[in-house]
Length: 232
Image (cartoon, rainbow, N blue to C red; front, side):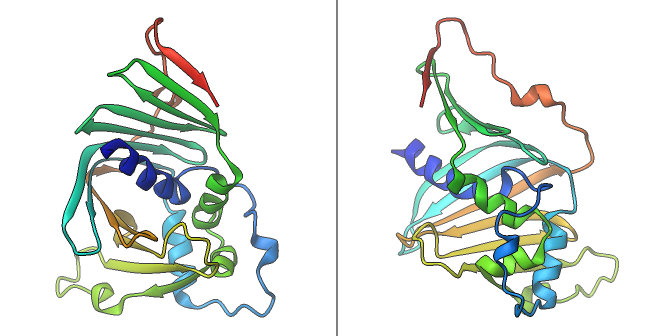
């Protein structure tokens, strides 16, 4: 049950961080010519496309509609844009999830099983919108708000600015109701996902590194010879 909850949250997370962000946005052509882009859309687009590499330790906390904690997990994430993502769960159960271009890999070491499946159009569309740096594409799919109370400048003028954005889908597709993205300076610090069941999955990142080049080999899997490999 814990893993299934995590997979659900991870799939939502892929909508923001997976593939590919340098290509032309899938829905850019659908943006209305009458769309008036505000500073919130432009600022968010710039932040989402500001770094090529991202690696960090994560802690995920899932709370139900009453605010009670129903699940937690910890691990590490590596991202090399435009199309490579690795997510290693360390606790409560070890699991590796990888997006490598157009394929999704799920490796469970405790049962020696590897699942390989193509990345669906649904999974690949959202990252294009959010990581392309195209404000019109974002505006065509989301209502973006910047929370001014959190975004206010610190009294320490040398401290990085904290910025919080909320995104609400224009289409009611039932995937999630709201995303919250928190930045310090230009670096993503946390993501919160409110799903259709009113569960809130919050991912907090620490030990963040956006400077180190991540080798492509990290996004490849070489499981033991006796691993059960399932293609879907």
